[in-house]
Length: 448
Ligand code: TRP
Image (tube, rainbow, N blue to C red; front, side, top):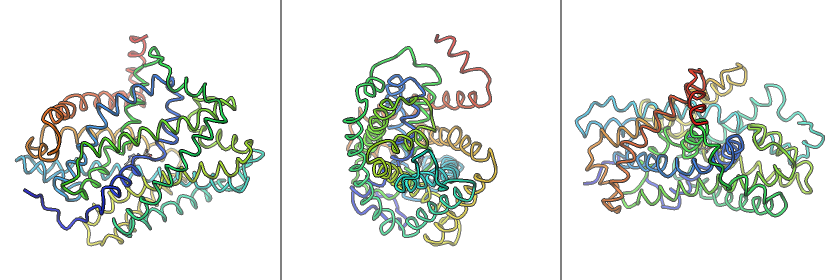
């Protein structure tokens, strides 16, 4: 039985799909988030917990999102509501898609502002603006951030407005191979000239005593964010998938590539961090102050800094594209707008909210909290419940025709029990970290 595709376009090739999905997953979260969280959470202890979260929780959810999308081939909201309907359940399960669409929208508002900063820093680096610590006016005040955010959203809208084939596929199939090439080059350079021994032991020598609830929370959040889960993005990319695609396998390729890029980013950044005696745990500053400072002191640093920020820009753009298309397709479904119109209108709204975060202090932080600590885990939890408890088991089995019964059973066990429990704990710990019920502290003292 072939599911109706509702005239949905399909990926032209497996390569195009993989580049788009890996492009979505690989973003600022890999280049900046992973190294900095590793730095803040005790190095290898974090890496180990992160790998466990990817394999046992994020990867099964990634498969689930692709399966849900392909099964119905409709927009994220309709795919989830219709799947529930097939099982004789309420179409209110469309809430899974709604949470995702809202999350994608919110995430993009702040993601774009940060990506704008990446662009500004790239230009500063190439123009030698970092020497002497000056920022040379490229990111001062509020007007410069507003301008860069505007440029970044314009690029994102430009790609998405041209649709799946002429826009997204055309860009990701060029940009992603270029990305891998630049990343490999910078990593080899950094390992061969920086403090690579120190970087390797920081990333990989086991320090289990440093695993605390806060480390687990950070690792779970990072795994979800990095694989673009809980935002209906992978559901949406799944709707363009052909029935021939092996979801267990391609999901593994996507999760593996994303994890590899995160670790290689760590191998690119930490040798420099240690060679210049920087603090590996300094967080946000690692990308936007430490690295530029270092580049300004390195021979050929203007060029290397330029490559570094172009790398980050490509990563951010291919992720932003996948966030906007979620909102654009949902918009197309519920309004009379065509694909270009919807990309422009919803991209414009994202731009407006993002611009407001530049002028209203605290707004960006609140949006970040709602998107990252609530919407993403909630979206993931709902997907797990939808595929594990609501959807007909046979329909889900039909989405993994090439996988053995054993693999299907393992997947089903993970999405029914392991993922929901882990995500609920993450949600509670995340709320605690923000509002301080004292849970994190109590758990840490128990563990200690
Ligand atoms: N995965 C992206 C990164 O690592 C960010 C991200 C999170 C994302 N959720 C997403 C991107 C959903 C696209 C869609 O930077």
